[in-house]
Image (cartoon, rainbow, N blue to C red; front, side):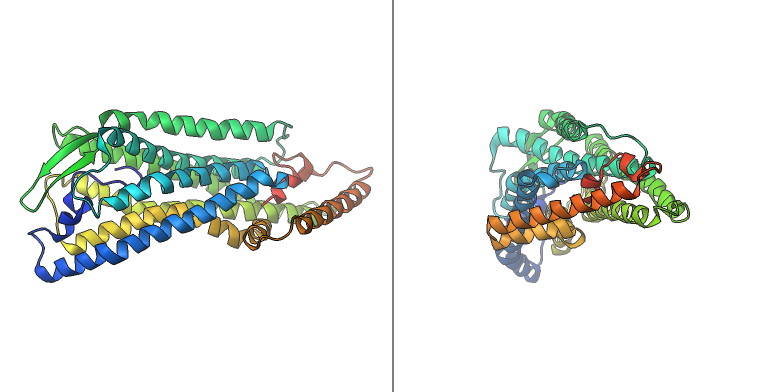
Length: 383
C-alpha cells in the first residue's frame, strides 16, 4: 500500500474480474458493472480536473507574486507540487485497474509508480509537520530573530523533504514486483510492494507505512498544536497595554495561519485514515479475498477519499485566506494586469503609511516584540 495503490494482492482492486467474478451474485454483478462503467470514471476524472486546476493555480499565485513568497507559502507550494505529482501519475494508474484485468505498466512501471506514490505521501505528511513546526516557532517562540535568508532556508528545507521522501521510497522500488494471483474467484496479475515468500511481509509493510506516514507525524503535529493552543490561551491575558491593539492583530494573524495549517492536517488525517485501516485489515487477513460488492464499494470510497486530499487544500485556503482568495479570483476571472498593479500599489502605499505611523508612535519606547518574532509582518500577512 502506498498513497493509493492496491493494498496487497486482492482481486477486487485490480480489474473487472474483481467486481464481477464468479463469487458475486448476479444482481450485484449488474450493479458492479454500472459502477465501473459510469461512477468510477466520473469520480476519477472529477478528482484529476479539480485537483489540477486548484493546485496549478495555487503554485502559480505563489510563484508569480513576490508578496506571497513567505515561509508558510513555500511549504504550501511544495505541498501542492506533491499533490500534482500524485494526480498526474497515480490517479490515472489507479483508475486503469478497474478496466483491465492485468497490470498494464510492465516491470519498470511496477518499480517506479509505487515509489512515486510513496514519495508523494511523504512530501504531504512531512511538509504538514514542517508547517506545524513553523507555526509553533512563530507563536510559541515569537522573539526568535528572523534572518534575511529565512526564505532561502525554507526552500532548502522543502527540497530536503522531497529528498527524504524519495530516499524512504527507494525500498518500495526495490521490492515491488509483478505477481500472478490465483484464487477460486479470480486470476490476475498485480503489482505488489513486498515479496510473497510468507505472510509476514504484508503485515510489516502495512504497519511501517501506518507508523511512518501517518501515526508518528500526526503525533508530532499534535504536540506542536498542544503548545500552540496553550500559548494562545496565555497570550490573551499577557498583552502589553500600550500596544494591546497591535499585538492583538498580530496574534489574530498567527491564529489564522495556525488554523489554516490545522485544517490541512485535519483533511489529511480524515482522508487517509480509512485507507490505512483498510490496508492493515487486508494485510492481517492476507489469504482471504472478499469479492463482494460491499467490499469493493468500501475500497473505492477509501481510495477516493485519499485522492480527494490532493484537491482540498486550495479550497481550504480559498475559504480561510482573504489574500489568496483575491489572487485566485483574479486568476480565474483573467482580470487586467493594470488592475492588479493598482491594487498592489495601493496596498504597498497603505502599508507604508501604517509603518510610518507605527514608527512615530514607537518613538522613545521599547521595540515592538511583534517586529522581532520569527516571521515578519509581511510574512505573517502574506496569507
